[in-house]
Length: 217
Image (cartoon, rainbow, N blue to C red; front, top):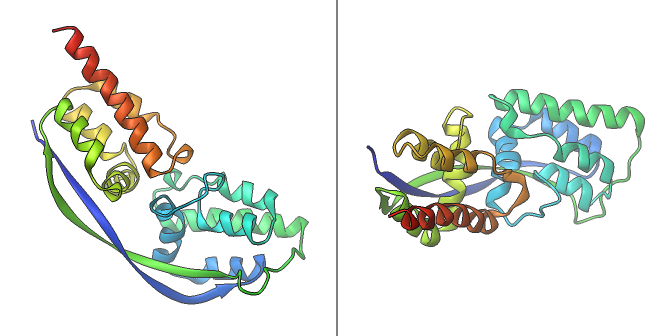
């Protein structure tokens, strides 16, 4: 049985040297920027202070700055975890915007100062020094680790785990044989919570398991 080694991460942000003031300019940028930029604006949306109504930076900008709420909703329906490659995710985002522009070819531009700035980031991962050997220790760690650790294991874990379960669910199932608890975490909708909301929910679920186990002793 392997212990769970908590890691956390930090991101080094850099400009992609591109901006957009209209949906057409956004579309051209999405087609041409690096995979790292697409990754930053989609998968890493959860690491930022984000608005739960949206699920990526593109949909947030379209909804908030351009007030094109229909397109924002369509972009928010694109689940990055459905794709095994950034290139496929990019193609789907392009398709959604292309379809919208076919019906609304002249959407409004952003006001000056509200342009979309393309960025990209590099993730640096390092250990926290916190290790859990069982569910009770796992619960205590969840309460106190840095929020970037929750992000790394629950959100990015789905990516470096080859688009399988998050790191928490995988460890509970594979190393502790806690299949029921693992399944409860697997079925959490990652789009419904910010990181601290996600922490509280996971803690609640794991806490219920620990209390139940104590009652059966």
